[in-house]
Length: 271
Image 1 (cartoon, rainbow, N blue to C red):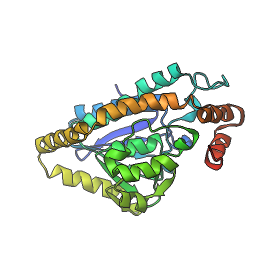
Image 2 (cartoon, rainbow, N blue to C red):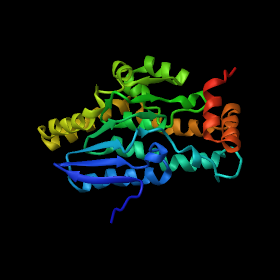
Image 3 (cartoon, rainbow, N blue to C red):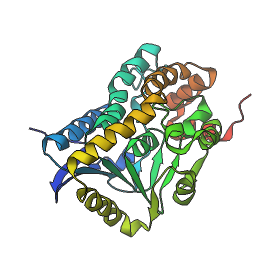
Image 4 (cartoon, rainbow, N blue to C red):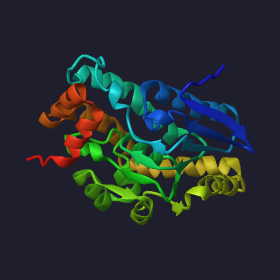
């Protein structure tokens, strides 16, 4: 029996609707949520639906990885070890390959922030529809961090990927659409209707045709190096936490809280 505690799952009209359900944490990707999300995706295949709609409950799609559990123990006062990081990657990275390999399309309906891991998640989906309030980016590069899945260049091209990954800047939904990060932007009140409209359009194409087409399109990005890039970026993200700036970020997080660490990250020039 699938009884998730950090997301909701239901099927209707030939599709599965998955809502990340940690609104008090802006749907931050905890390890339990990642595991439940992988299970929900696989459950959708078992339920024989034509597509998955993925969104967030509350004011955010997902603000990223849960920084409160990034270390070995929350009260340890230490920087996460390489071993901690590798263990985390072992749990998290399969989520992206699960979505990539899923034989049915996943439509992301992005409400509010989709940052860091939330951005990775939204852009890994087959289609991404953004509400006007949505924001995208990977601000963690400002503390020496790296994208866990490095999906950006495969979605928006190398020039835009360089811009966001060199600077850590965030972009609004309209700019994300211009960059090719999202398929379209709609008013927030129309977001779910727009996502369901994509599902209805998909249902007009034979199931086998969609599955074969997804497989062929996946082959294109895999020939460009998608799968080893996801794997290796996970390793590099782990090592980046050992940099001077990664260590300083986690030291401030432990002593002053996540908010103070983020403020330092965004306001401090680094040589």
